[in-house]
Length: 93
Image 1 (cartoon, one colour):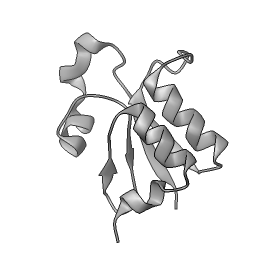
Image 2: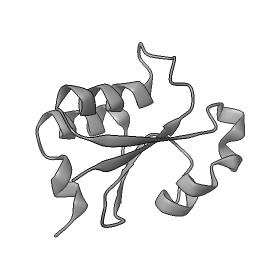
Image 3: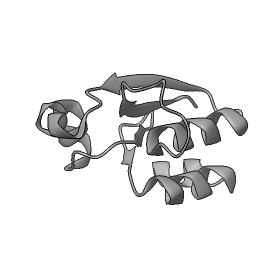
Image 4: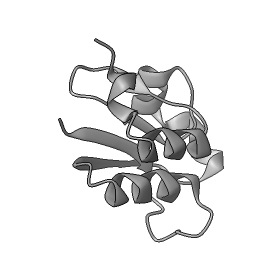
């Protein structure tokens, strides 16, 4: 099952960046994903329409599963979930 990574468009930012932390975990765990990049800057949070519609919030990153369920929590928690092999448990039944 492929997932969609909803993240900011600041893909050049790596060290300590929440979006990169989650993306790196997906890469390291060999999980196939598609990147959906939105506005990167904090002052552009009101322009994150797709993210707000899907999560009810305006903070990146988030992961959307093929069944339409969206998983979002703090990036460190998301990273732990991915590395523990439990990402797809968040997709529901």
